[in-house]
Image (cartoon, rainbow, N blue to C red; front, side):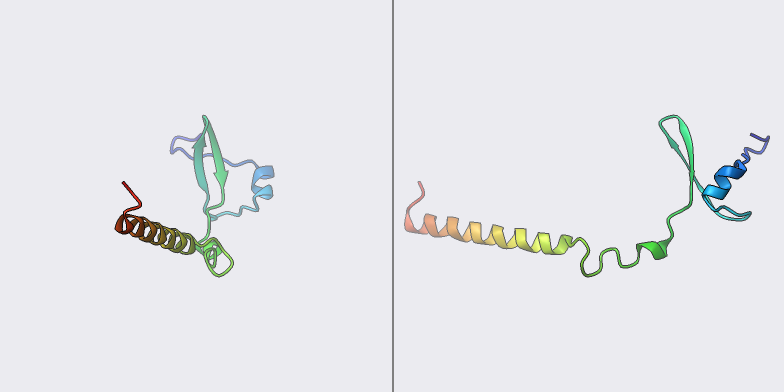
Length: 84
């Protein structure tokens, strides 16, 4: 490592990652190792939650409907004297 903290990435690694002068990289510390990777581009995230992707809203809506039905059944039992 040079005095400014710069590190030379070996040619074989640069080629495998297809890195060129001026490319951005991310360096992570993982389990005592430094790992070099390309940054995740925002464009690669586009559409991740589009139709066909995971739907947290759908799951939340289903859970909410279940809770409403559960509360309505419980209230009906209370009103009819079946509980307690």
